[in-house]
Amino acid sequence: QVQLVESGGDLVQPGGSLRLSCAASGIIFRLSAMAWYRQAPGKQRELVAFITSTGRTMYGDSVKGRFTISRDNAKNTVYLQMNSLKPEDTAVFYCSVGAARDYRFVGDYWGQGTQVTVSS
Image (tube, rainbow, N blue to C red; front, side, top):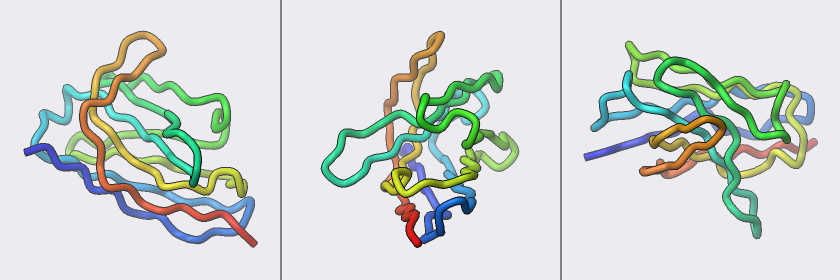
């Protein structure tokens, strides 16, 4: 029922930019908190950013000031604009739908992921 489809991952040089998209279905999107996670090889999944149903945003320390999460309720889509990319940003990026509370996000569903590679 719930489906999250990420797109936009690519190979990019350090300092470059990418915009990831996640199209959601099977949920009441406008009432849902959405998030982006990432997972690098051999590492645990890391929360990158989330956005509440009212549009408030939170970011992980490693991406604050470089990444921006946003949502378009008319398109049932959440975005992650990534600027000033670093090699350590290389990971599979996943979107998630869940619940937000203060500075926390708890994911209920995840997409299949999209690969982001930052390398010269």
